[in-house]
Length: 325
View (cartoon, rainbow, N blue to C red):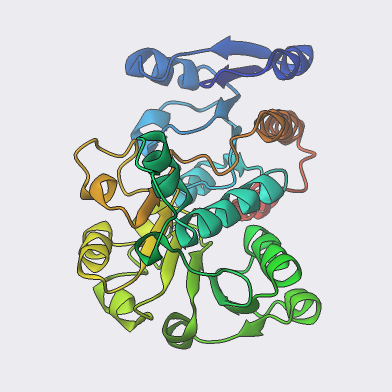
């Protein structure tokens, strides 16, 4: 029976499913040496939120597949995995709707100052009718600019156009005809999107091209009343530049579910800004979705080890490499 390493706690039903197909060795990734030793003696692995470096895989000659319980895969050196002939699988579909819900909650919470004013009420400050100093801004009818109109971006566009009558524009490597037809989305260059959107929503993976995609110059090009929403990866935004822009009023506010350093340090200036809604990377964090992600990742891994996985493969080149070897 093939052996796999699990470096994340799995739901009982998912663990039972895996144990029907493979021997499961559960490890604590904080015990680095034991974790690395387990990988070197395994055919596959499943987990999330842990950096897997090339050095950790030296000597892991049996390893044929890794399955991450996430849509993002920046914790892996994909080129190195491909060179080693290791399939990397992810879970891009099952978290789309719950993550889009989180994105839209950030839009609403930031625009209407929900967190700030809820805390204000709890602190006993609501003694009379509120005035303009506590007003928010409308969401309905505004322009939403989505950077990266993939699965999650498309789900956000649906909520915006059909639910809030928002004008949707987007920038993407390729056109999205379905979103253009169904939601009236308009494809524009990034510069136009930043200059004309009331809300700018980042939905891109973290790559060398997208690291600090939004920096000081981009923030200055946005409307003074614009709100930045980031639920993709923290490093897509230059956090130092964002803090300065929020402090100086260059932009109106930010709704953030991701940060350059996670967990966000307690002394981060972002936590002192009233115009910031900060969440602890909860994009897909519902009971239903996390369970579905774990099950999907487990099924991906079993199929990959059997040589039958045809979907959810990050590095498809590894299949070509295997076929030609």
